[in-house]
Length: 361
Figure (tube, rainbow, N blue to C red):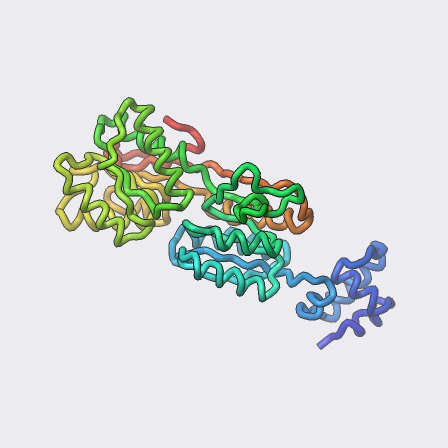
């Protein structure tokens, strides 16, 4: 196996010069740099990542902490993160916090101990301990999918987390939630529905709060009153959503249309409907937040909001690399538009599938 000394001899330079080219620790003349790179390619030299990290204090690794990696939505986010990381020469260490604040803190500590250069985290519903840890240790971090709100006085002049430990300093990337959810409501209202239910996600998650806000906004835009009995929590997972849907169907005046706030809860809602022998959209119109690969294979095909999951993942990597390059720059929140995918579970006639981004009908 070729060594750094072999590369230096082949290129006619010192070992120190080869190190500077590999680690970007000192400017090297373009001709010299090219000679070193050519020698590396010719000899098949493979740099020692561990040795490089000792020189640069960088491991060229990113810690990714997302719950429910088996969820197709997070799987696609993972694909976006991985593609962005590999494009820039970074490896990934992947953990699952299980949406549990204590476990979330443990995996963050583990990733930090592994000396990752930065982290991309989908925070839990109670991320205070996590945010305090990351801020105390000045860990470059991007929050993904779920935003963490910071009080106005939380960011210190340096751009790092303030004394309260909330997220004043962290970059964040997520999809739009309010307007797309409102679009589902107004679409159903336009079809004549007056009792539209919502199976919401886990309380405390920003996505849950924003989709409830969008639900209420859509009701108001359609001139419909908000009825708290038509809102049930499915806790962002299938079994709880099945119970929540059953509770809505048991009301004296059940909903005639239903919105589920993520793909796992859509599965739970469909199970509850099947248990009662109810059909979609004949007995109940159904729309869902989160599209997934087999949504158009259901009968009827599911009308859905499609999130730009791969773009969210890639955007998180870009924000993190920008943060690593400029640690003191102001934090940014990147929100990406969703697409309304019009199929037939809402009760509309079958039509060629199309999607509309960023507009509320």
